[in-house]
Image (cartoon, rainbow, N blue to C red; front, side):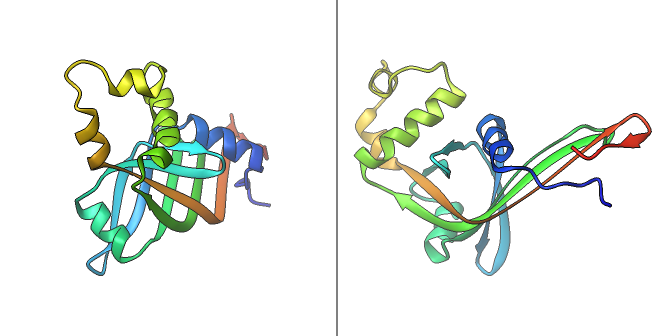
Length: 158
């Protein structure tokens, strides 16, 4: 029996909520392209902050089918977790639609504060920033997970 196990949905949700970096896999000009990204896990979807131009956006506009991966491991191999999400990316342009996801990203990566206070700080250019920013939502169509935890000499199914 393999010591590598699937994670329960509750564990996947917790892992995706807490992990700091994910990897977005797309196809760009017929080639695989993987980008490390910050993200938030919001209502069962991945939310990624991107600019309105660049290779990521070119790839997503050409083919919205994506793979998103998050992993964590110890260097000695005694523990790892990984989650793969396959789905379609939706690009949000409307400011009102973007704000709840931007708020989730602020809460995760910054000192949590209300979006209006954050975007209207001195030296920020709210109109320009909101025009340039996009939120990419990935709605999972298929999710796989694996975990392995080894205690001492013995592998234990967790």
